[in-house]
Image: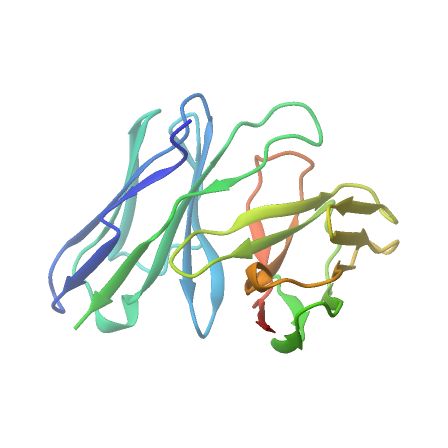
Length: 116
Length: 113
């Protein structure tokens, strides 16, 4: 199994530019999570989807952030316009919710974003 | 929001020594998990705990879920160089993979050969 795939792995952009991060979850998984990791705040949930439908987006910092999941095998996280404080590592994770005590969340390698 | 207090923030130990780190929360969680993150990679699950008081081992790793459901510890015995990394505790409200994780700030482990 290929695992969770994220692209790009690294992104350097200038303030004000649009940034799009991409995620391909593990095939068959029905939950997809976007987390952000910073030195100050650690790992925090941004948004998560179930069967392509957003369930909770309360962690999205502000209107500059948006996420979509057009199908079961693809999700995007977009920042427009980007700001230096958005610099962080963005992780995508997926899981298959099943019986109790199952359904580990598997993380992708992350996208390291630097906004200058 | 919910927060997990993880300690220590960092540790420097000699190869072969045992390691202990812990996590506490003001909230009750139904599931506690321990992840490890290597440089440039995403977190990888080490141990999952589902029942209060549960003690679970995975090789040299042992973790326990506190009976109050508000704390957990992770022990690593006989540390080796590849144990280097950042260890995170995480709490989860559900018992399966369908609820978000709340993470501690991590314990950075360095092993001196």
